[in-house]
Amino acid sequence: MTAKLLDGRALAQSLQAQFQEHIAHAVAGGQRAPGLAVIQVGDDPASSVYVANKRNTCQKIGVLSFAHELPAHTTQAELNALIDACNADPRIDGILVQLPLPPQLSANEVIARIAPHKDVDGFHPENMGRLAIRQPGLRPCTPYGVMKLIETTGVDLYGMEALVVGASNIVGRPMALELLLAGATVTVVHRFSKDLAAHVARADLVVAAAGKPGLIQGEWIKPGAMVLDVGIHRRADGSLCGDVVFAPAAERAGWISPVPGGVGPMTIAMLMHNTVQAWQQHLNRPSLTA
Ligand code: GUN
Image (cartoon, rainbow, N blue to C red; front, side, top):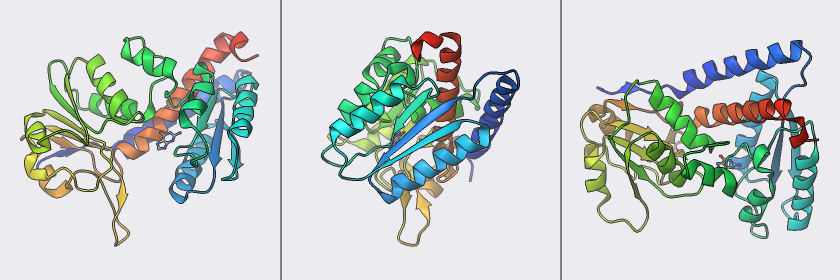
């Protein structure tokens, strides 16, 4: 293998240690601890794993987590009422509603109802809009985590050819905005795009967020390119893989993020970053939450 590994597990741990120290110092000085409301509707098994991870990380670093597990048949009015209560609760700095939601519920309505200053997922139209106009507020966690991983390489993104594979609201779109903000020349490909291989072959940086195991062939990667794989899929044998076929890609790339241990841990680390950021803002301006 020629590529250097982008170790998201190590970076996430080091960031979380910094947040933990920051929180402990503030609490020792008499401040309240940060609070994060984690809301899950129904019992999708993958969501349950993510939510448990988020709560464990909160506990490790000293964030109070307020868990809400609602039944799958929860109505929009009930969920809205819970969000209103969290918006008004001065102990809560961040509100996270785990997606996807059961079909009777509108994710768009839920996201827009969260107070933008408590939107630690960064999905609210105000936060997405801020990122688009180069005035970032709370930033979507996965793209932000990818940027932090890229930063560790010391590579300057100015003028680089960056390719984002996937155009979802959660990853692809905000990823493109982050890369644009960092000065890259950005292309986004999606399910209607033609000739994925040709786009990949041109890219100095590939962020794979299509949600399709092995979609990107290692042989397509430009020699020396940087590859960030956001995909996470369970194979029949129980092992995990990403959107990129790892072994051949690692033979050509300059840097590559593994699955697991690459982008995944960074998403949670940046959720903690955003929770600390929201908490700081609330401590400075208590009128936002009171
Ligand atoms: N489902 C998949 N990714 C995410 C995420 O980053 N945040 C939330 N709330 N739900 C998700």
